[in-house]
Amino acid sequence: MPATIEYVRPHLYAKQAAFLFTPARYSVVEASTKSGKTVGCLVWLFEQAAIHGAAGRNYWWVAPIRDVSKIAFRRMKRAIPRELYAANESELTLTLANGAVIWFKGADHPDSLYGEDVYAAVIDEATRCKAEAWHAVRSTLTATRGPVRIIGNVKGRKNWAYQLARRAEAGEQDMAYFKLTAYDAVEGGVLDAAEVDDAARALPPDVFRELYLAEPSDDGGNPFGLAQIRACLMPLSSRRPILWAWDLAKSQDWTVGIALDDRGDVCRFERWQGPWELTIGKIEAHTAGCDALVDSTGVGDPVLEALQARNAGFEGFKFTSASKQQIMEGLAVAIQSRAMHFPDGPIARELESFEFAYTRTGVRYSAPPGLHDDCVCALAMARYAFARPRARLLVA
Figure 1 (tube, rainbow, N blue to C red):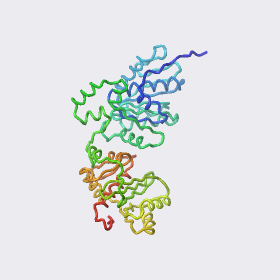
Figure 2: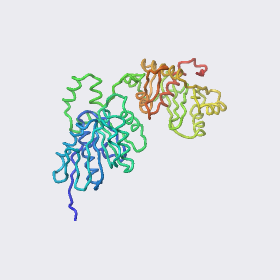
Figure 3: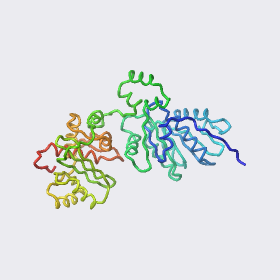
Figure 4: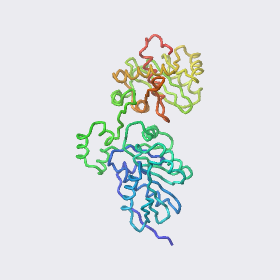
């Protein structure tokens, strides 16, 4: 008869437990330094292996380099009763009594991560791991449909972990997003408030915000400015719309409609995915007699024609490299001068993720790979329309 072992979970404060034991397969955590994310994930990974493990089942802890993973290896060794595991110091593995093996690996050679079937994984310090390492780890979870916890401090916006966090925050299927700040850790009894206050005094503001508040710095790739975006946040205006702008869905994108009031503030916001017949009807109903600028690029042409057949107030806007640059620069001026306001949520998230880059042919404006820019395009079109003479919207 197999031995029965009583297990008592170490204390976790509420926000630790929330990101660890969410039912979502992918939990992405942007966290303050020393907020308990590593300890929590050691508990989670051990439970995955101890409760669900069996002989031959692999569980992975992946850190940017092997030496960082070795720190987690030693911490888990100290936490588990010695009779419950056999350690291999050269391989950095802990084989539990049920036969499950917990591996501690470095992400600096992503090709070495392919091949195994992994039943659960933690990616530690994810913003410092290579994107190729994430791709490899994800491949190992395919056959098992294993869960993963992706944790780390915030480090700018130009990394795969930041982009994945934005997708999780936007509510993608089977993903959950969490933020742990230093003040959450103080409330949870993990950090001392005086130590956090001292760090705020000692560190540059951008560094403190990244390390302790989990707020990304503006690393030069955002055309609007993160501080300026936050300064323009305001609930939806209750004033009457004077114009609408509609960015139409393409493939997996969203149809987004944004209306501005007579002050240039966002007063209506609509966002959905659906067939063109539904979209045409909803745009006509929401616009309700206002002038409206409609994305007529590519598949937008027949939609615009159908709308114009019902209402003469619809005008087309074709996105080209030049026209997109023009309206994005106009939007940047409006945001940086606080000439308009918009609500927090999808609009603000997309603005914060938006990037520009200098290329051989000019400036390219777009969302990072895997993210959306529908809200940004609709907002830019709306601002472009607002800046034009009110009697008639002009076609780009």
